[in-house]
Length: 117
Image 1 (cartoon, helix red, strand yellow):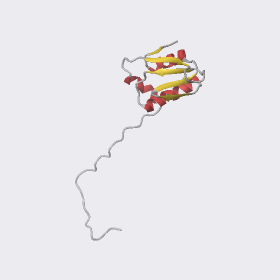
Image 2: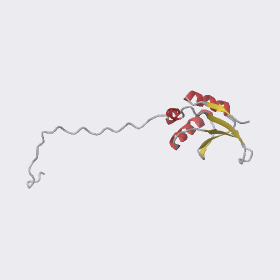
Image 3: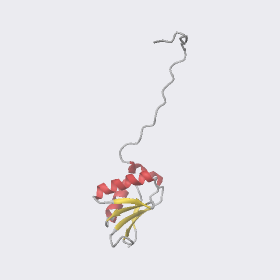
Image 4: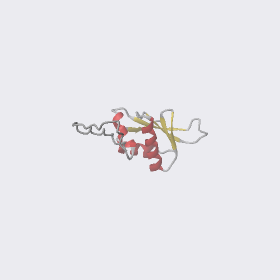
């Protein structure tokens, strides 16, 4: 019901345009990360220290926000069929997968190199 104490007001101005939201990025967030790297190479190390003799492929030098690193870990875990995590800003992938990781990172646009023994 209309309120009889308030007069009806008409405007000659057009309706304001609704503000548009930027679409949220969909799909794999790891694919957009290499633009932050510039010319900084990514190193893939093999590490056993402090892990009870278990071998871990350690990826160092990724310049990305934590969400981007998590997306990259998820992609690598899916491609390699193994476990992994982000610890202290570095990415750890279970097992010795250095060659495969270097190949995958180079496909994504990183300048990846195998390092260490």
